[in-house]
Image (cartoon, rainbow, N blue to C red; front, top):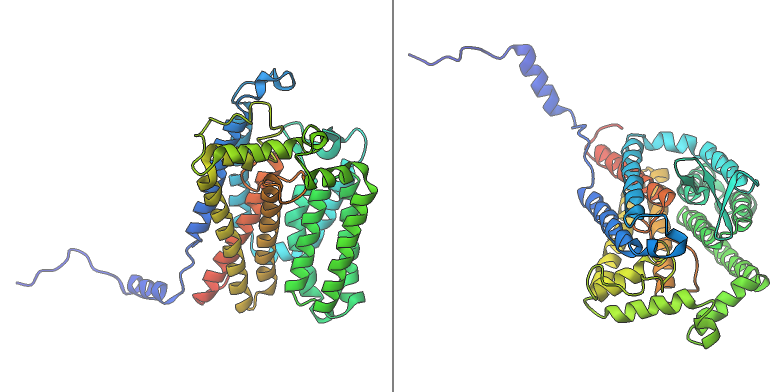
Length: 403
């Protein structure tokens, strides 16, 4: 006697299964290595921020804070960053392209508000923040990711004029120039440099005339040199960087740099051990922000520094790989955005590490994903969420689906 199942598949169900197999999968696939590298950098940043800031309450300036104050706040910022990243990941790239000009105008308004007395918050002589009660928003950080989107959108819209100076470059130069003026009034030369590099990099990758690009790059170098020459405190910083061990420099303008170099020297290859830094004990100012890499070098040694550098290198390389893939799929805007994010993360990381290692003059730029700072870590995660979204759309299109 033949065995029969107590139930049978209906023809409709079988047809549905077959149709489901025929259709390309719309599963939310994502680049897992990219996510894990990002999470590892953020978590390592949390540990090092705690280590670098644990002794700060011993000083009069932070005497009212508990030892874990900066760790708790950074953990809150990281939580907000991950939630914001999850939300941004759901936004189609086409929507980002349509809204890029409006986001640029909105961020410009925020940069203007920062300069208004009573609205902008002054910290250490710089007016760079807006007080939102819960935390201080830094519009210059937000402008970095917005500039990536705006420059990519501009390049796509003006593609036929990329070889012309007046129509292909002048409008973008005006927009970047306006942003630069507002940032220099804060003042924030470091953010200005990063944003200019983002805009120029995206334009160059988008097909801007190479000869014009070289000439304009030269003009920008002269402009930044003039700004430094006309600014006494920037000029003093530059000369201090050239000879940091001179007595006057070591105790004044090059104080942070010399103690950063001492931290790297103490770390040698394997470091003095997590939590064992001496430079963070009020010798190296702002160790949990701009000079976090020096604490990593002292506590984790050359080995730890090389691991961090390798992770950032992989992150930037992956951004360019995703960008090339998007352009190959005829998604020019997405490809330029992905590469622009790579330029942004790469340039800022290079400048921060260069300053910590004494390769570049001291400049106030944080280490992406790792340094203490609310707006910075949130915006970094948003940028990488956009990169993940581009990669996701690439995967869907390669499987024959539609976004």
